[in-house]
Length: 68
Image (cartoon, rainbow, N blue to C red; front, side):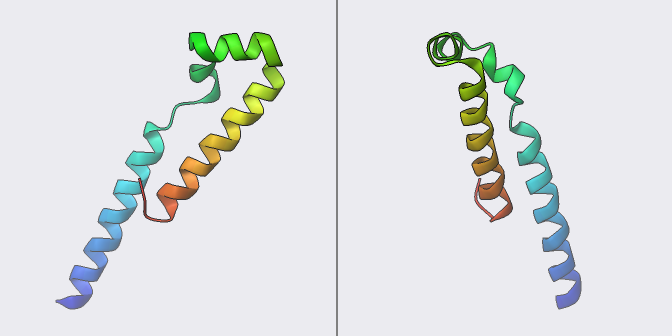
């Protein structure tokens, strides 16, 4: 029974992580935000995209590490 419980926890955690990962928006969806548009105009779209990608990567790492 312990193996079953352990397997169930692994499956549930995988499902949770998959769902959490799907909640992370794409770069293009974030770039339509008025504030990010203003930053993009001021500092350049390439820099803002880079920063967004870095933040999204950090969010993914947090999810994979067990946080949310």
